[in-house]
Amino acid sequence: MKKYAILLLLIGLTATFANAQFPIKIPKIKIPIIEQPKPENTPQPPNNSTQNNQPNNSVSDDFDTKGRGGLNRQMVMDDGVTFFDAEPIAGRDAKTNREIDTGWFMKSHLRIFGVFPKRSAFRITVKKNGQQMTSTRCEGAIFTKRSTFASQRDRDSYNEDFEDFMSVGDRCFDKAQVNTGIGKFDVEIYFIDGDTDKETLVRTHKIDVHKATRILVSNSIVYPDVADYYIQRHAESAVAIAYFTLSQKVGGIYFQNNGHGFTTRFTRNERNGGHLSIYTNFSPDGTKGMPANPHARCSVNGQKVNLSEDTVYLSKNLDRREMATHSKRGFSERVEFNGLSVFMPIKYLSDETPDGKWECDVIENGVTFRTFRFELQNGELVMHPEQLNGNINLFHKAALIDMEIPAGGSRFDHRLLPMPNAGLFYAIPWTTAEGKAAVARLPKKGNPYHVGEGK
Image 1 (cartoon, rainbow, N blue to C red):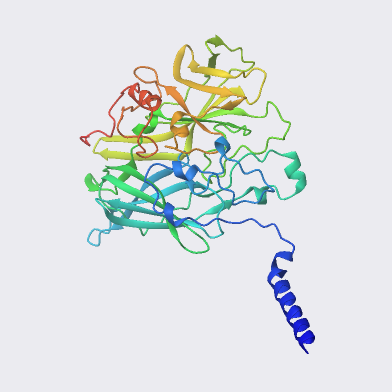
Image 2 (image 1 turned 180 degrees about the vertical axis):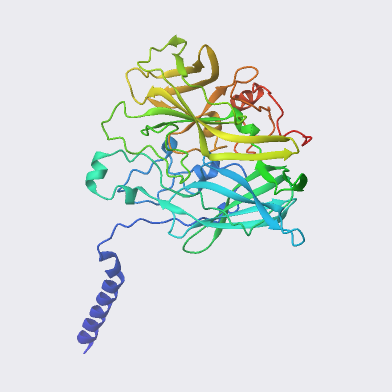
């Protein structure tokens, strides 16, 4: 009997160990893991994403997911895409049955790097003196390489050197969320996880809202019209972003309002595939056209570069325009802040595009409109110190570059105002000597705001 008891005991122990080990014998299935926002990152430091730039290994190894500078960024805003637009809201006066001004609502264009669950969203709050005035939720469009390069043939043929992201644009607004008043406001951007609804503060900004009053004249009687509102962007006149793109459309694809800009469709062996696009901001007067036939004159390390094609294409970026009209009897004035897209004749990985420190003047008929300075290493743009220290974040392989506006401004600059303490990208403080120097040499031109505002 003892032998049978010992035998039964051994069989039981064997079964127990077998059951304990059984789960690890199941063949592993390789699936992407989505890393949820970590509690220690909530809330984020308002304007410093350095700790968010740590490598993240949450995506399947089937894909090359290294981001700018060899980092796979997760939960990091693309500051170059962020854009806010103040739009008027009209009410109706019951006594006169006329439209009247009741305030403004905000439109937002946003993009965040990382891998996120479906139905994830942004929530944008506008605050005045610490009090929340409005809150707008916008579900994002998720973009991943996994869906773009679904087949092995695509992966073998094309360069997957870009980052996954979520973006909102065009329709990110709610007219029911009405803000009143003008002046300085705080904007907070929260990421909302599509699986858990958990909110994470990812960026804070400051905006400066101005009001342009308007009138109507009917039968020689003057009536108040619905006012226009605008968010001034004078600080952005000192900022330029460069990136290579395959798009032949002027201005490239980085700032299309759907936010889905990336330089991905290079074949793995392709050369001469893209051109350098530069994006900046300016304040035109609305009546003068862009230069008709500008060209680039460039040097590298002080030596002239002979470009086979030197034509430059300039255009306004209408998707990123803030505009308002101020009027009174016999007088009308438009205030405008607009994106300026510069398509340069500098080819990606070309034999005539050597590494080194570049300086390019954009010239028409002997007059210089802008000077751009940047550096190429191994054919790629070198990141600005403001990127290297984690102060600002741009899309993969995009770089903040040095820009100079000629003394007195060019003929298409209507308003220029140096604002050394206003930061960049809606009040992110400059942190480097290079960035502060760019702001310091910005010239002043014209009235910074509409006539009669008193600012």
